Image (cartoon, rainbow, N blue to C red):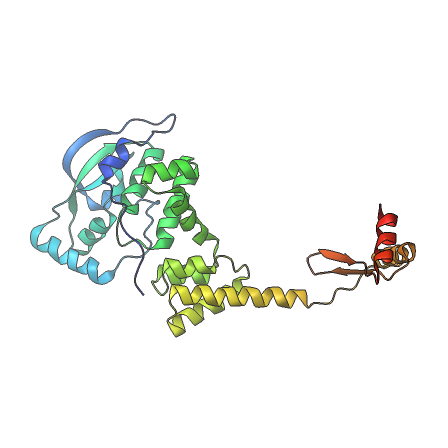
Amino acid sequence: MPKNDRPLGRGLGAMLGDMEIPVHSEHTQVVSGNTNIRIESIEANPYQPRTRFDEESLGELAQSIKTYGLIQPVTVRPIGNGKYQLISGERRFRAAQLAGLTEIPAFVRTVDDALSIQMALVENIQRSDLNAIEIAMSYQMLMDECHFTQEELGEKVGKTNASISNYLRLLKLSTPVQVAVRDNQIAMGHARALVPVEDEATQAKLVQQIIKDQLSVRQTESLVKTVLEGSRNKKSKVKITLSDEVRNAQTALGKKLNTKVNIKKDISGKGIIQIPFTSDEELKHILSVLQ
């Protein structure tokens, strides 16, 4: 099914230009412009949002690197003992490893942990090949690690608060739904339609039906509506046994009003008190007693 992911439309430079560096953060400083670093000295970034790389595409890039070399340097930061950590360019880094390179060109920047996280995540969020779950995880990490509010995050990445909320809601879905989005079996719109379904087993069944029947987002929304209405009707038909206390109160109120009172409760604990009457005079009597 087609993907709904798309780049954010702003360059990394523009993003970082208006980012507020957290308190205690060092300013970014270029230590060395374009220098060669041994691949064995570079570690992957733990905040890389992409968990899966297309092997065929990676192989094609590796072949290109074998032929022409790595044209665009990766960006790294020193972490001590002659080691470096990737800030951006993990796909190029992996392809260079496949190509058998022992060293690669890199921009070396001195940044603290907080700014490194921001740079890595923001750079990757802009990629068109990230799926909705990876974007949602990136947003959540930026909020957790950089202490952004949802509104601040929206300003940083150029998205509305509603858009950020839509992505974050995906992380509340069950694992089978998230995996289906990650593997491009369903689109973000399908996943969003499943958010109101609280039962995880039901979510999993619906995902299977969406994939099997190749349902559109609109069809999925209708299906979810039908399932939710059926669930509510089923709950309303469950017979609840009243406690002795409630039954005694029902009898006492009926005697006081001189009519049969009926108390009904549903499974959630909500309920109604029904007081029937047969004439205007009886209604007036009931009201006077209640008043």
